[in-house]
Image (cartoon, rainbow, N blue to C red):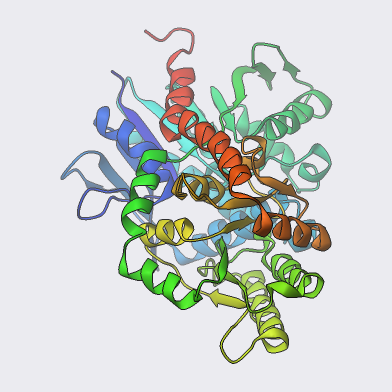
Length: 460
């Protein structure tokens, strides 16, 4: 069996009990352990000088190889090009995109640096799987260094339409870098179509019916591989955590009120301000919910050194304060806004205790929270899911109430429908969605992608 080498911006090591501590870790650790694989990426540390080689931790399986970034490269590669150029543009927020040639040069330099630091660690029969928008150009740098290994790339965020993609200065170099891979994976068929449009209409390439793409003199395989969750583990955690002290405290504090829950990173792509406005519209239009329904929004901070994230935090705090100030009573607050993170097991218990899951991103690659909410429910009395049509998960979870997050009144109406939904309908919708998240779980995603990489012509 070939050894698997996973490359990502950050390396998510397992905890002291050997459990995965992040979404990507859950997805790939099993395959890494099975092949005695290697996980390579940034250590999360910044240093004043140019870093040397990778630091190796081979005390268990898999082996971890981490590299530091100097502070200049961190500002330009990570805080700059990755999070102020690619992230907003790929999420269709051209108004927030900051273009700076120095950002691009820093991005390319770090991708080259990662490739050079990985090179001496590669073995002859390795499969290399590179993840996400931070490292689009790394495959091209590996090819330039003479690497002929099978290279796969999976994009965890949306791939934008040609009109949006071409607004990125030097987008041609990003597109050319994608041609270095043997297998390209996207979250949804919509993302794949957007890539195909770029290939046909802009890059002068060809798209064949079998998934093969001819681009800049290379042939590669491009397909949608919708990512899933560890469904059984989520259900197990939810059953156990539903009886935990934290879940009991939450339920007791509600005093039999119905709970709507949202869990998102504090990011402008998640539509949180519009979500709060939709909840306010619910209280305005259906006053019977006042004093009887609570919105719990958990939004851990992220990328606090990027200006746009400071702004979204301030806007959300202002909106929550406005709604609570207008509608709260001495024994009830409409919104419980928590700007901090919780253990995964605790969140699954909170999902299980909720009557409605509210997932309304303005644009999202997949959104695994929607799938986790489904998996965490009590089969006999499941909650209803209100889900943005712009989340990749909406293509699979058609038992949800699908909404346009820009339509404030429409989201409010969907919330009211979810609150009033009869038990029989909730069970029917949930059963259908649960079957999907079981069938299309994280193992299926991983095996489908790696299977495509292993089946490349010329491999044994």
